[in-house]
Amino acid sequence: MSSSRLYIRTTHSKVNRFYLTKPAPISIVRDPATNRIVTAPCPIETSASDLYSTTKKDILACLNSAADIVHRDRLIYCIAGILFCHTIPEPFGGAKSCPGYWAYTGTTPRELLDFIVMAPYQAYWGWKGRFGIDAVVKSVNHALALHDPIGRNKSETDELVLRGMNRSGTGKLYAIPPHLQYSGEAPGEIIAVYFNARETQGQIDKGIDLN
Image 1 (cartoon, rainbow, N blue to C red):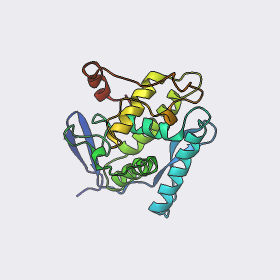
Image 2: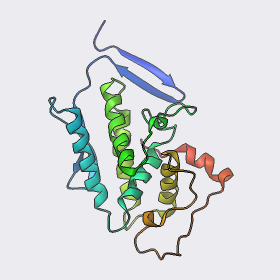
Image 3: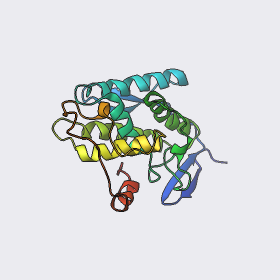
Image 4: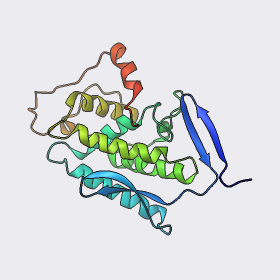
């Protein structure tokens, strides 16, 4: 059997590739020049625990840069809101009846970030392609861009934060908790964010284009 042979499995409109060649060592790191997340080669001897730790540290460094605008947990839930959608490739999306994010069983933002970091690496090492890794990179950068002081889109981020909280098991919420609102908002300025389920459900399930 040739080592370059490729198996392809289709799931709905997505295509998952399973490679027979060993995946090249890769890591998710922070680019200090842009304060954005990128992928880069990593030493082959790097342990899984070190890779998880370094990746989380770099992602948190990016998120902390926006600490004067929003709470870090808001950004984590926003990232989950982008990734936790069946239209996103596995390990987060997949079959609409059983998307990958259902595997998440944590209860805190820290555990949520652990899942977001670990799941795509495990899928990649399982020879299922780097779709999850690329999705994390793009979702983190997209969440940061949405919260940029100049070009921020509050209505979109509020919707993504609520989706991230609801789909990560926080509960069925219709309001952004006060500590997850933008800094500087008056206590009564944003009481709740409501959506018409009939109008928004289809839009929500379309997900974000990460191509």
